[in-house]
Image (tube, rainbow, N blue to C red; front, top):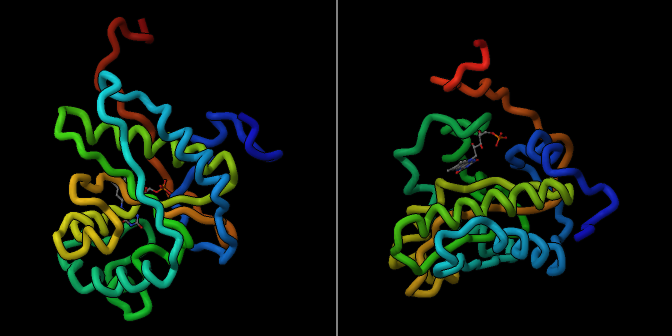
Length: 196
Ligand SMILES: Cc1cc2nc3c(=O)[nH]c(=O)nc-3n(C[C@H](O)[C@H](O)[C@H](O)COP(=O)(O)O)c2cc1C
């Protein structure tokens, strides 16, 4: 499926992808979202069991309100997520969803083994497809515990029988996104060794 003139091949997208934390106000169209969900739904899935399900929120005000509600609960976070340090998270203006216009929550209602793995594989398809369309994404793991609470789950529009697994913000990147240095793959063994 041709999605745009600037479409990248898959390996270019893998190398170009980074977590985007600053977005323009430009809306992501319904058509683009549907293309991304189609890509997500093609990910490997255990025994074609229960497919992942998606909640899509395109309401900046609601996301800001939810962020304001969740932020004070975030005392046990890791010290940093990339360049976003822990002090920034507690600043009154800090938006956990980076003021992105779209939040996609990948959910499951299955308790089968690997049901969550299905969602993560779908997430990677979605993230890479978005990158190929020059859209930015960032996984918002910090919001996940709140999405599972009885109080906030309905405010995120997650039906009772579903559980959130991967929250991803989506939007048009504002400016360049710095590349985070990544380590080389660690090979602990190779049989037979390529060196022989
Ligand atoms: C499970 C998971 C949860 C994450 N949660 C957050 C988050 O809550 N906020 C955030 O800004 N980034 C989050 N990230 C993004 C990582 O910080 C990011 O992938 C990492 O710093 C590497 O940078 P890169 O994605 O630009 O290569 C998360 C990533 C993963 C895999």
